[in-house]
Image 1 (spheres, rainbow, N blue to C red):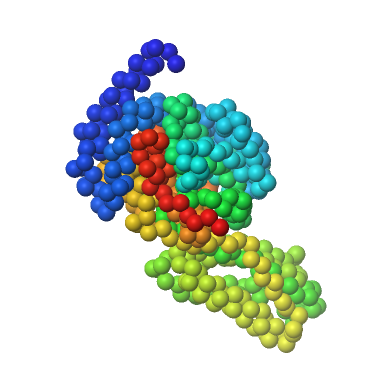
Image 2: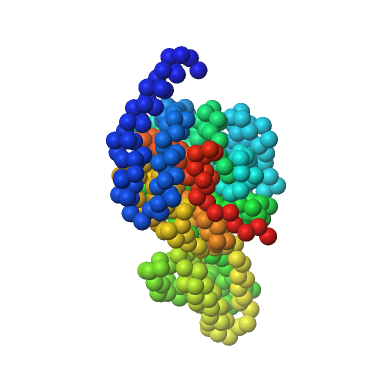
Length: 450
């Protein structure tokens, strides 16, 4: 670093300290302005934000904003179709190693993992992650384009932004030798999207039973925090019959007709709005010719709910309707030839982390510090955090920073508005949970080891 750069950072750090002090985030009385925040969380923030090294790190994250955006674009242009994340994983591993994690590696499932040890002998252990995969199939044009200040590319926000924010965070804490009490495991996960079925985090928690908390950086805006895991069950239904000529063998049951009966029944299902519970027949295909009785037809169904109980109730009703449809198609043609094979192709568990959990309170407090506003929205969603929440492990999903839209489409867009808020938010949340060595105690509890 040049002398001039050091002077700029020092001046900016002093300015940021003044802003934080003026906003009341370091002195005691203003802490009470954040509703329902435990006193120990506020004490931890006061201590952490009073540390010159942390003030400097926060400012360096801001100064790294343009570099992080360049990284985000580079990651976006490395294809990572469902179950084919290897090339992007190898690049992410290289970047982890370049930033100081020489022992970083790719595990048996394809996750990229780097462990940053603290002074507490591995207790507590916090995971901070972002997912490597996208929803887009192989061959999709993922080149980045820019128009009128808007960046366009499939996956530019989901989750290239999360990965870039994670690298910016790592870069700045390593450059400033920020030492924690607890261990931090940085992870680029696989299998978050499509039919990946959370295979990355499932393998992570299978292989690392000592994880005490989990943060996923997924999405953009930092004032929206996910503390509820929307569970989902996905099924493929394969209808099979004898098939035949539409005229000469009229009277045989049709796989497409059976599927149509099933869909007609499914669309009339009633589900509660609270807890939100949904369903859709997402894809259908089948038949061989316009003048043939279909011998096979397939459909894929997605069911979701914020409640495991409601999800299971919906599942039972829907599967029964599918079976009824087959019975009716056979009865219509006085046959027993029509069958259905029902295959579970996706299982994401539901879960919830209470508002008084230290991980939720630490995240909320970080948002108020970074944005200097009490505006924080808590919501349910389906992310990598589902698995941790279902296991009773404190978890949240937070935004990577910036603005964007058209998720999961080829017209996905991104604008780097206050994008550095993302890694700054992750930094403060991480430090409160793991503790800053010599400054604050970990707010994250150590789970009972088996």
